[in-house]
Image 1 (cartoon, rainbow, N blue to C red):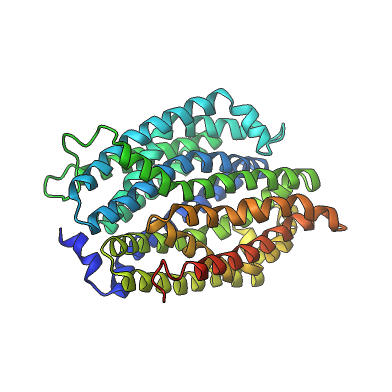
Image 2 (image 1 turned 90 degrees about the vertical axis):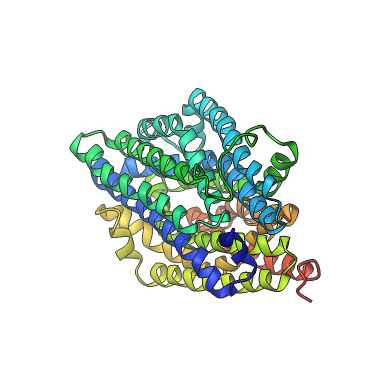
Length: 447
């Protein structure tokens, strides 16, 4: 009880760090794992395998998006119910998360396995990279149910007042993954299959770790009889709130598909591998901002439910400031040290040379991305699904897709148009976030 009520009483600054720091550590560990995984695959399997991983990533993100549809929406709803002292519904949210994740993950697995090759080809795979991508994704899909439950329960742990336990679960998964990667890839000569198998095994161990916390009879939010039947009110609200991150992730995946295909048309497989390297860099720090967002989410949701709007806004302003600082680091690394960053992933001189220029282009607007991400998360945290969905789609659908298709036609080097479409869409989406925030100031009690 004390862990949840502190969300409405403790100083917001200290609360934000208490909840955000474990999330940041967990998200950073996850992103570092992705870097290490890419390094192992790049050096152990070659540049084509690294390109295949870039092709497979949007498919993995689509699978994870269905997990976020349930997990993020339900965790926001849990925080709101706890703020309203509605503990019965809070517990029902937990049971519904498990059931919904099992159903959705099974559907995604079956559909993905049936149409795997056409999906990967649509995502930008070539004849040279398809074999690697297929081998990797088959194993990931078989373990999809573990992925969904893992992310869903981690979100619930944060809203239930256990940010450190959530962090520990992530670190357990990442540590096991990093240990198993070289054993499977190099020691057992399993290649990309080994990397995928390491991911599934590590998530299975993390899920067992998470379940122990929700089985504790001393916990306010825990497993017990009567919470497993799907509740229409809870499922519809959770899905409505979770629709924002879901659509963002889905839109992002389709944007990556379009970018991959444009890069394949104008630069070939090596251009896709170059984009993969840049994504790994930006992903690390974007995950840190997501960690800040995860720390802000239960604070904002609880205080909105408790009608303590000044505390809700204070958490938003602080998170914006920290997110801008984090993305400032990406700006410096991408603009000043692009060659050094690229050499972390590959020794291929062609790939290194191809990556330096686009990395500087894409990183040029990193300073404004943090604000846009936090603003969208604010509306998700307080259950304002419509505005959250709109902000989630502006960058990907409204701006980036048209730009990435149109801009190559106006550049003498078409591939430059692909690269420049990314920072331009970032700028336009940040401006849109300012407009939406200003228009919503009364409903957010900013006046």
